[in-house]
Image 1 (cartoon, helix red, strand yellow):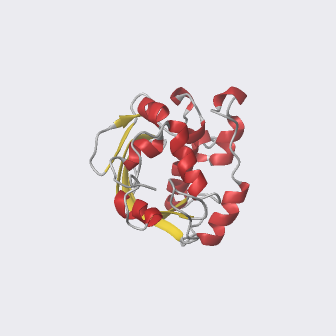
Image 2 (cartoon, one colour):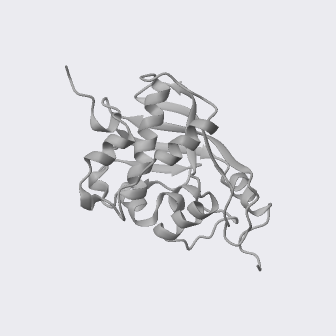
Image 3 (tube, helix red, strand yellow):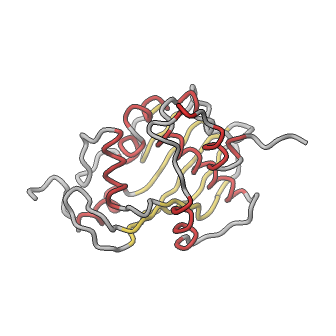
Length: 214
């Protein structure tokens, strides 16, 4: 019986299989965030369903780009071919993400987000604003491999400061559609994301641009 590839075994398995020196800081843990996510998610899919598989692959991808420092160790994608963009913007490679950070790459230009954030500071901004976690779920898969189109929801509780704006405690969420080209063994080759970044970020600021006099 053929063994399930590592990148399809879930986030915990990929974390456990990584070398100790693979991490930017330390190996991430998700026990607490999984608890909150299970309570707050709006969908639940059967294990082994296409929706559950897509969600797991994206979770592995997000973990790797956020915590593993060398793209050569990212098992969720074919690193040398991978590229991604948001809302038809410029393409970014795996190396671009490793250097700039996924938030900077995928948010793009917005009056509600500082453009001088580093990889590290961009993560701190959102970790501070949503200390319980910034969760992601698949809502619906519209087309199967090799070109997987899916709807998603990304959310968190605004319980910490966001660039000088005080928390409201409300749930901040955004919805989008992504189109992913994958290999026969379901590794990522290309991902296009479509969502309203300004509508999402404006909820942190009450509709006022971040670059105002505090």
